[in-house]
Length: 348
Ligand code: ADP
Ligand code: MG
Image (cartoon, rainbow, N blue to C red):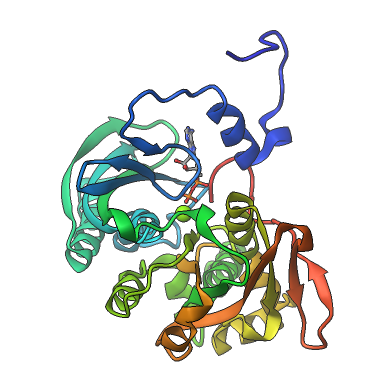
């Protein structure tokens, strides 16, 4: 199955997506019901009258979260949301989750209760039942793995691969805030470690910090699109940054794209923090990640329905693959997009 068994190849050379592509080559699914395996936001299983969609995401202490500034209730909430976001990214409706925990001896009963308060709140808000999981001791910090299951009517499913030339590229909400929130939290932690008498100052950072600690999956956008009878031609959720997700859509759809810098939605608080920290706000939106907004394409014929839709911005269009992927700035200068979404071997 795999060649070169005696060789040692560092995972760094492959990167996260390279590794997944490599592993995918060795996997040969046999069920005719397996409609989509590796390669989209969810696996898709044909259940006769509907498609079932399944996704899993793992959060590790020290990699994805830092317990020194991440309240456990928020962490529980976020660990469910990041999974629900992948179900919505298929245009699906989540119904169930299972939760596995690796617990270190630093975690008390009260801490686990807090974590579950957040998970229960997320489930309640999205109409999801928590139906099982697994619990183990962990020697390397807290580990949280959530698997979510949902369903989509067969004619409503949105894959990454369906974008057509001239389709309009849309994003929900605003981008870059979660990344700026992380920068603020890291800055305050550093100040606190250097001088424990100085209390963290998060005034004026409420929005960006909340976007980092407590993201909300965009159930509302999926419902709004459905109420307008719009099925996106392709969709993905923004976990790694706009640029990386555009690459996924364009690669899967064998297309290119043009997006317009001035159309990328960035909140004023995000822009202010970015400027203060000498970060270009567009770079925060393109490469920041963890926004858990939806990136999708629609047919031009749906333009009238979407142009004034609450919480949706049209940021560009799909082109032929030969045109590549590019960002057009205010002076109409084109810069090729780089997929910068990857941050080490572990999925961020
Ligand atoms: P997302 O960011 O939407 O959660 P990922 O980038 O984590 O998606 O994963 C991309 C695809 O690779 C998905 O289809 C996922 O199921 C698959 N995948 C990720 N890790 C593994 C693995 N270790 N084995 C098999 N498939 C994997
Ligand atoms: Mg995703």
